[in-house]
Length: 375
Image (cartoon, rainbow, N blue to C red):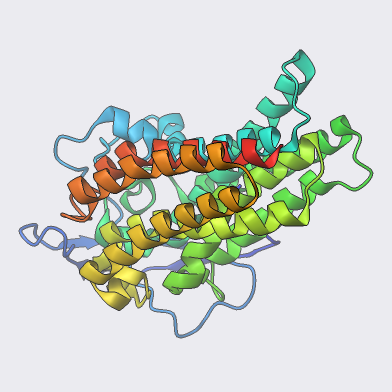
């Protein structure tokens, strides 16, 4: 649920683009394109008049040799697709759902009240759908909407800048996913018998966080530190809180612990910034690779991930849970190995390979911490 998210009543204004020349810096050998397009501006408040808004091509070629599998997951290297439902799925980036789904599992485990019966399993599945496909899908779609000018530079083959999906279709998708997620949150509160609709308000708060992360005038992602921590908290803290509140009580110590764990999420969020350096710099976004350079940013990234987990292991040891602390330390070791093997060598080339190799150990560490918290 970010990671995942309030899409406030927005004013819609159509503006006509004039023809212009656009050359993608990512492919200097391509001829410039003479294109026009209509633009739909979505505003929750007054849009910053000083915001730079370069235009995107109406149509752009897909990546050479793009993968249909990558297209369905919503990651780079995707093939160009004409099927509107596959395009809609691509916008939600299913590859980003598992951490949110896993966060719900961790919250349920930390509550100490989850039981392997039909009702509890059904509740958890609904909570996972709320956190993953609905609210994370909303987050990713709205982020692509507000990043369409950056994507026109970095990834012009993506659905929105390439014109594979219309602007009205994107707006409809944003609303359907948002309202669907909020509706499921309200349903879960009724189902759990909550006097205070805590799951609904967590979904609402996460929705708002996602909106201000991507949209002007706040656009938290313009600041590498604030934006990445907000993203990390959305991916780690919010689904955990939802899972724990659904089956038990959300306590202050868990809130603090998960927020601290979100510093590791900040490091994970930085990984995604390396592929967007060119566009971020052109748009004036101060991502950490832009602000500090690639070499410094990659060490900040791995430092945030490793130091956070080591600190949590120390906390578990200090609270009399040495076996959980040792298990967490054991899960940190392969992450460090993959950092040196892939990420620190070339964070742009090996970003996907590093995440696929190392992040399973990080999310297992989250579960170890959740199980320790339940005792």
